[in-house]
Image 1 (cartoon, one colour):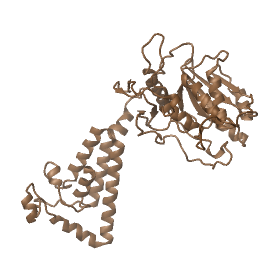
Image 2 (cartoon, one colour):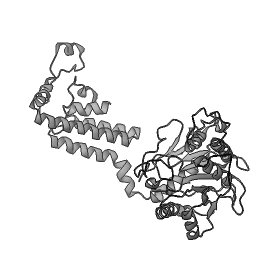
Image 3 (cartoon, helix red, strand yellow):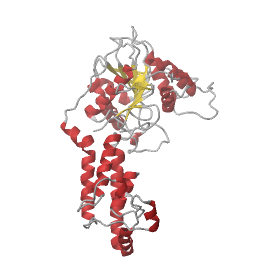
Image 4 (cartoon, one colour):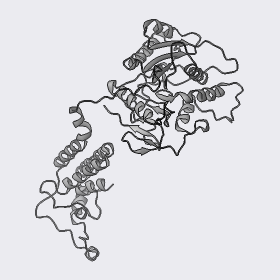
Length: 429
């Protein structure tokens, strides 16, 4: 706030008791008055607080107000007169008695009034200098990508990417959406990462088509055709059955340490930056594991790199719990005390990873190291921005749901960014 007020005061945009000379050191410059001091003060605060977004937006907003004030002063000359009269604003000069008497502010020996051109030029230059360490200098530094953390129980993979799919009415679009999504995860596959595509639909032609296209030992297609007469068909049952399948023994596929749920229209985005962000989240999760032999259960039990029900990274110990809770929501005669308050399936999983669900309660006394090796809580690990795109909004599988193509896209701010108790992996590109 002091930074904003100092800019408005030094540009004569805000007429209040002038305190600039008492706050900003030095004498005004011949060309820019105290504006250069105010901007240097803001840059220093930005770098000290490591908040380029906050101060960048504040600087742009300040100069938008300055520009609007100058334009209005031309259109309505009385505003300009009021601005000129502000030159006789009284200043305490460090002496309260002089302020009461009304001693006029001493004028500098030269004219420090700012032209609009000088104001905008200095403002833009300051913005570039302020943001340079964050957005310009990194362009000239080589990108450092971290490897996937080691598997705690080889040959079991560290991560299973579990893609849930359901048929869409437009077969051609369905195939294209699924293909784009699956291809985005292929660069991650190896001994430590497996890709599984799961459906609980009785008929899924796009699934069958892509099963013939992708022939890789690191990819598994599974259609679960069992019936559940005691439950309603839908997302609750689909997700519950996917967790049951991922947690039960499977031929030639050991259970992975972590499972990441992905809806079939949420591809990983941002290229190597997105893949690196996923690896960084997994590295922090694995670093919370006690140093036991054999390795114990990690104190952190979840990550989140997407939104809704996609990009949720879940430790294998939570899968049976989530399967039971989701199946209970799907039952026609549910024993849960829902009282009409039925949480969406993705919220059920999110609440579990956040420790809000009593069945998934976290030990608040646990201490984990953050990504800078400092003591922290053991909460959810997220990316600052979404590294998953949403490409199927216009071909929704949910009846009655409005179509959209502009919701939750790649690069959007993560919905949990700013929430208490989460560890944020800063992601930018």
